[in-house]
Image 1 (spheres, protein in one colour):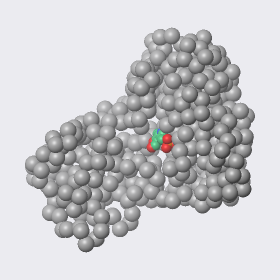
Image 2 (cartoon, protein in one colour):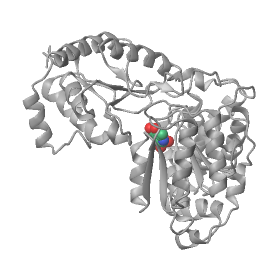
Image 3 (tube, protein in one colour):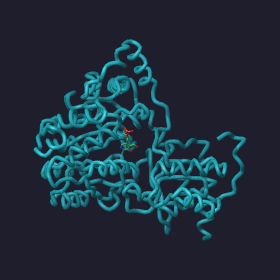
Image 4 (cartoon, protein in one colour):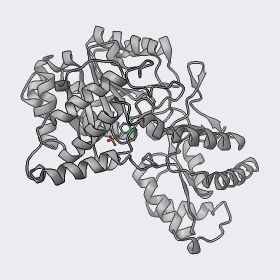
Length: 446
Ligand SMILES: Cc1ncc(COP(=O)(O)O)c(C=O)c1O
């Protein structure tokens, strides 16, 4: 929106008008999806000539390092055949090796290159992982989510005809989490468990003791853990940025052989547009066999099912230049030439500022504790206003030129809003403070 088109808006915008728009577009704020919210905010921005503060997008807010794009250009210029040849389904050798080295340097695990399979973003990896987890054993077609989480993963489970169960990390941490998980595993209907740590949206990070407890359960009950590391190492309370030196990034791989780990380029390398990630299949799981897989993947072996029954029928491989880009990023990070965690630290600084502006205006953090420690600052955090439901908070935020995702759409059973700080800049802090101030006074006099 051009500056000359921005009029001075008197907040709040009329609730009658917003209600009319919601009815016209058949939007329910209790169940609104991220895409619907994007469209709604676009419409409101035009209708009221407001530049919204958009906390709903979970997209990278910084440019990627030039390492990725220049590698893509270089490889395709030097070898024009790249564009006319199919990639191998299990990925280019260079990326597989670079992933294996990166894992050793940053999370201190040894896996062979054959265990590292590129996918079209973490979404693609999560889709195949869930398909395998939920189809291994007859009767174990439920995926357990450590919520809140990334809503699209549940949509994938639905798409695959799987069932979903949820444990809210607000209610269960530490030994209570392990006990709760065991009570679910005993039922024998759970095929896999999925979580992200740091967690989207609460930024809760699982502790070593929790990973150890989860790992033991996964082994004991033969359930597979899907560790979705979309925000790998972005818990800034610990500095994981020196390759090959402790502390290493915590992982489930230290506690079980029953795991998939998904590493996405989207956030850690701001490479979301090129749709590239890697799924690491534990070397033991790679060779494990489950009779029930045959029906869906024409093989009973997990590794084969992933590659030939999962990658082949979905995308038949991953664009080769993107694979070279990710390989180059992993290589540069592994030899200490590219400090990727330093680049994305900007989100920590933004979260600190934006969080304090919300708190100064009587908003509270929903997920505020990480087992006794204050929550880390990162890409997202969660806010609430006492006495208001998620959809009501969103309704009033929209009337004051701000947008975020209602927590109930993330699987949380708490009332509140996910705030993503990726697209906020220093010049927005004053505007945010003014709008929240008006919103707070408005709500106080209702
Ligand atoms: C927890 C989590 N997993 C996966 C993704 C998607 O990653 P990708 O862009 O690699 O598909 C996201 C993106 O926001 C996410 O938050």
